[in-house]
Length: 158
Image (cartoon, rainbow, N blue to C red; front, side, top):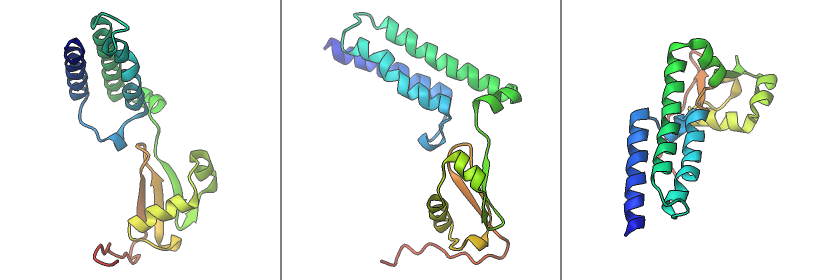
């Protein structure tokens, strides 16, 4: 029964902490937020398996971690140069229908990955693309040239 109580307490602390940090989809996590989610199990596992008889260390560790993430996000919001250091900026991968090989190599993005995103956007030829941007959240945005023919997704065909 003690294990169940410990899990309920830790679960509540984590849910409250994540709720305070704000709403984000997992695909939109910043590197700092992803690291936070990866560190949480290491902090709380001793309290859950009773290697540490006290829940206090797990709660203090988790709330400290959430506090750090919150403070860093506040600082990044109010100090733009800090945001540039902590977060990545968008990278142009295609410009006017041409791959930017240097940027693609720097970001380790293959032409096949770009073609996949183009197809998802309904664009099938590189010449139809004005820009492809690797956004800060790791997703690619495909901006077609004005007047480029776009094909709507047809989920009814097999």
